[in-house]
Image (cartoon, rainbow, N blue to C red):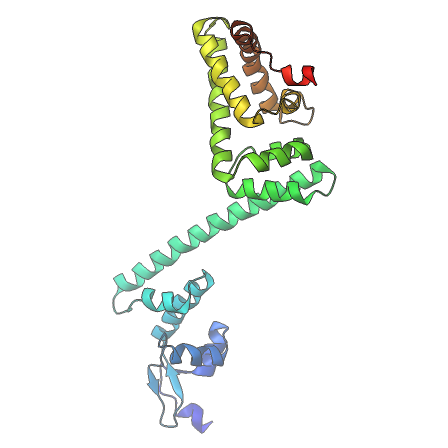
Length: 267
């Protein structure tokens, strides 16, 4: 009791602060040692004494620590709280950091939910596909769900042909050509016209880039747009694009004397 009476009004002991802020006494002692939060006073008996201002500073430290900052980073970010503007500034910074953390966590949650959906739809355990889906989710590839529709041979081929950067570049090229095919179809451009033939050459060059000359990959690619499990929007867009792509390729092959399945026919 004498010790309690010896505590000046407006001050709290280390134990009281620890209890109020749900931290350990050892944590407060560590912050003191690291120069992050020193007591505002020391009692005649040598007890560390804290004020409400120290509580606010401790809140700064705990908030930043919760957001993943190291103690060294926190030391650089904690500012004096001598004016309302100081308090408002740190609260604004903490709010911005929390909003970013929420956005990151929301994104992570969405990725987890998306992966769960893919796993259930696959109805089989395939860790290679799981890993591919995770990588594509991290890359923010909106077409990650296509992976489950490829067989193991096709996925092995994709992994050997493309890294993350080149894979995304190839996908963007494919989407651009798909959109161009839809535009040409809607504008009524004949497949055998010079513009149609130029498009077909660009599309065929893209196919060869994907297959790396492996004609066995062609039937697999052609079947992709017909898979019953595909996203309905994707199937509809693919059908619209193919309405131009197929006759354009036919015209290009005829015009150029190309037989896309020549290797299969000669073996």
